[in-house]
Image (tube, rainbow, N blue to C red):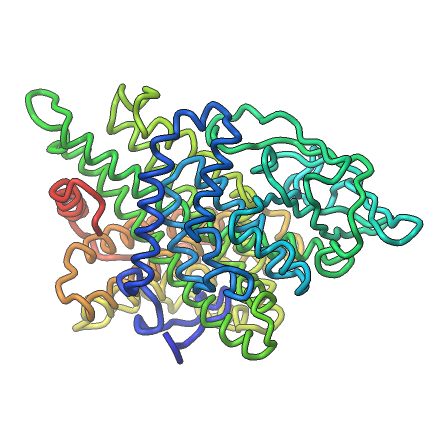
Length: 592
C-alpha cells in the first residue's frame, strides 16, 4: 500500500480513487491471519466456556480472562516494542478488534482496556508515563479504564463537574468528583480521569491509580446486555494525584477525549463485524437444522432473504472498515516521519479521519443490530430463549448505538465535520456544489453507450455524490449558520453520505477482488443489491431534505435532478439474494 493516492477525511465527496488505492480484507498477510486465529482460539478456549459464569457479575473471572489475554500478548498489539508490545499496523489492530468482537461481554472489557484504557497514555503520555504504565497495561499486569462520563455530562462531556486543585506544596492535584458508566471499573488498576483544574473552562486529563486513597468504586450496574463487563460509578474524594500524572498539557483533556472517541468509533466499527459474523453463523447453522412443514427452514425464500441481507450489510460495512484503516496506516507513516513521535502521529492520523470514524460507528452498530435482530427471528421462539447464543447477542448489540457517542451525535458529526474541513480549504466541497446547483436543469444520469460493469457502477456512485452536494448547497443557502439547528436535514444528508461511502468502498473492493480472484459473480450480486438499495435511500433522503429547504418554485427542478442522479438499472434482487444465501447455506458458515 505504499505510494497510494490518499484522500483527506470527507474528501470522498468530491474525488474518486482507484481500486488499486484501497486495502481489502482479501489482502491480509499470513502474520495477520495468524494473529486473528490466536484471538479466535482464545475465545474458544477461555471465553465461550465461561460466558454464563461471567454474566453473573463475576468481576474476578473477567479480570482473570483479561490477564490471560495479556499473557498471550493480545493486549500489546497496538503498543510499540519499546513499551512491551508488538507495534502492529492499524489494519492489524482493527482485525484484532473484529475477531474479538465475537466475544460478547469479554470483547467490551478487552476493547475498553486495549483502547480507551491504554491508548490515551500511549498517545499523549510522556516517556516516563509510558514506561510506568503502558508497559504494564500492554502485558496485562495492569487493567485500564477511562473515566469521562458524569451524571450531568454525557454527550456534552465538557460540562463535567469533576475538579482538580493543586495542593499547597505543589506536589499533587486534589481530585473530587464522580464518574459513571465506567467499563472495567470493578477491577481496573489505572484510570484515565478527566477533570477541570481550578476554574478552567476546559478539561484536563490525569492518570489515577485505583489504589490511591479516596478512590471509591460503586457496585456494578444491572444492564440490559454486556452483563459480564463490570460497569460502575467511581467516586473521587480528595484523591491526591501526583503532578507528574497530568496527561498531556493542562487544558488538553477535551482534545484528548475527542481524539480517543474517534479511535473508539473506528475500533467499534471493526468490533461489530466479528459479532455480526458470529450471529450469521448461528443463524445459518440453526436454519440448516430446523425443520418445518417437513423441510429445512433454510429452503424458504423469506429466510434466504434475511440471511442474504445479513451477509450483504456485513460485507459492505467490512469493506469500509479496512479501506479507512489502511488510509490511517499510510497517514501514520507520513506523520511519524515528520514528527518522530509514534504516539502523537498515531492519534493525529486517527483523528484526521473523523468523518469516516463517525460513519463506521453508525453504519456498523446499526448493521449489527439488524443482523442480531434477524438472527433471533430466524431462530423463532428459540431465539427468545436464554439457551441460545443469539439471545445474548441481541441484548449485547444494543449498547453499540450509544457507546462512543450516540448515533444521533455521530450522524450530525458526519456532515458538520466534513463541512468544517471544507471550510478550512482541505478540499473544494462548496465550489463543486455551486457548479452543480447552477446547472440543475441540465443534470442527467450520465449514462453512455458501451459501459462496462464497473464503469456503470462508478457512475452511480458519482451521481449519488452529486445528489449529496446539491443537498448540502441548498441547505446551506437556505439556513446559513442556522443549519446546525436543522438536525432533521443534517440527518438526511448524513444518511446519504454514509450509504454512499459504504457503497463506494464495496464497489472498490469487488473491483479489486476481480483482479485478484477472477470470478466474483457472487460479490457482484452483493454490490448490485447494495447499490439498488442505496439509490432508494439517496432518493428518499434527498426528497425529504429538498422539501425542507427549497422554495415551491424551485422544488420541481431539484426533484427532477435527484430522480436522474438516483436512477439505477432494475435488477432481479430476489435471485441475487438467493445466490448469496445459497452459498452461505452450502458452507453452513460465513466464508465470504
